[in-house]
Image (cartoon, rainbow, N blue to C red; front, side, top):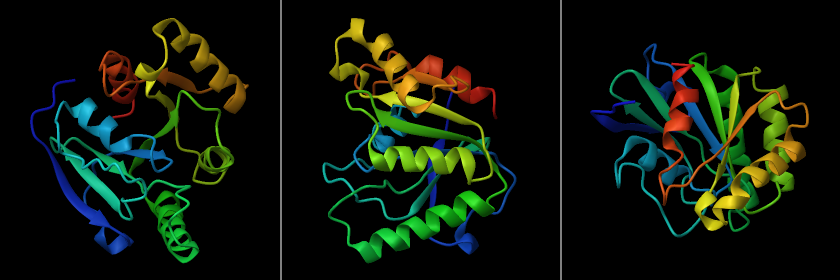
Length: 195
């Protein structure tokens, strides 16, 4: 896909702040340090559009990125960040849940996990929530940080993660690497089916 003019549009914590148009929304979900911002920058071939941080848990709002007025990437706050206060976790959790339940423009949820690690309890809870309680949106699972393991281990590892999370194998699991950028085209092929 050729991207000409992606831009950050707004950070929101309540429905009245969401963009008011009919553009489809690709929603990014994952734990705090899984690399959602780097995923956005790599997919759009832009270095600093989505701000990355060495400190996980920085994103506390829903960030809307307008992609050429064709669709949005919507970056939800990461979950599972232990240094966030319980009160803050509940607050963030509530507006994530509200967004997923009421937003009518969601066309795909991209669920990012770390290829190096087995899914955490939080990953499993979020996966279950996405599939069973958020309106049954289509879901694509991205096994990120594929550059951190040997190339020969990438495909078997993605299969292991799918066996763990999705034994029915009714979802697509794809590897991804912001560093190497070699899997970007495969991810675009899947995303384009929904926009």
